[in-house]
Length: 154
Image (cartoon, rainbow, N blue to C red; front, side):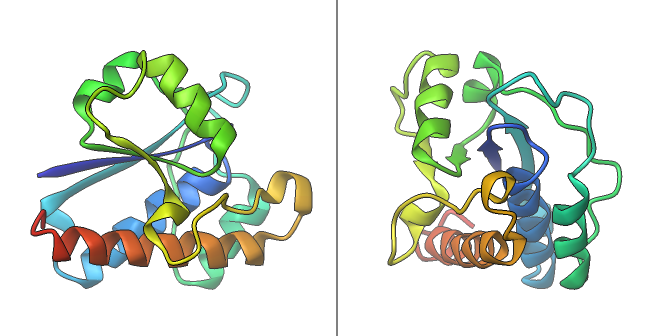
């Protein structure tokens, strides 16, 4: 089983969008039992909160439920538990490396680094544009899943 953790600042917008979309992709590809997918925050400010309503509505527009989600914070132990830790932007990556004590095994990446247009996933907390975030997240998840299949990890 391959364990993937998506990470953003608060775990109420981008990382849960990636978590639940990747779960949907994996299920449709018949790979759900080969992947454990979760998400976490680099900050503590939203711990326990559900997915932010506009992010939840964007997922629902695509037929994806995120019911039962409760934001949680990334821990150093997550580095050992997960095979891939996938951040949404460069600030997330810096915080992930700080929390995890570095990245000695090369497990940390950014979601869009798995696409042909590396960079940061649009942060809807500041832009209000959840559709743009969805485009980034969906492109990144599809590319990551294809990469894992090509590498023979699935």
